[in-house]
Image 1 (cartoon, rainbow, N blue to C red):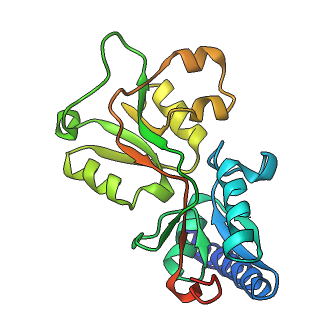
Image 2 (cartoon, one colour):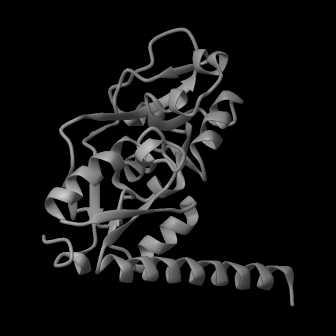
Length: 226
């Protein structure tokens, strides 16, 4: 058996196990909890923070009031999370699905997303994304299918998909990409060295301003009392 076929076989086994886990938690959620798909995105969602991050804390409070049950975090690597979302075998997710119309705001707070670049002299802003044509941008894989990614591509930018926020930060610090798409407080949440934080410059032009939110699957509306 060739190395390629072995890799395909291992990937299918890995994905199958992931879907079984989601199905198991989904079965348990019918009685006690609801499974929530997430990736590492501190300070908002993280296995290594109290309450699994600030947006998980907001969701826990929201779910007790409106869903009348607890939630069960299921943190996955971006590629596996993306595969689960595409399978349709999920109920709640912090990861935007292809059809992101089923969304519930869970706070009035604002989260600003834009580009970091390696710090240089001068202002970092633009009137139109087309001004950044030909530039490369590191973006977390789970965000690479959304509307903002389409706008970047249409503007002539090249998206480099990464599997962690740290990977994106390191790429822009080493000048392997021109920009890194994330929130303004991500470097601090990643506990980046002070020198690295000083070498990063956040854009004055916001690309997205969103509220903390959760996406839900149509198949779980009754279970969620929606």
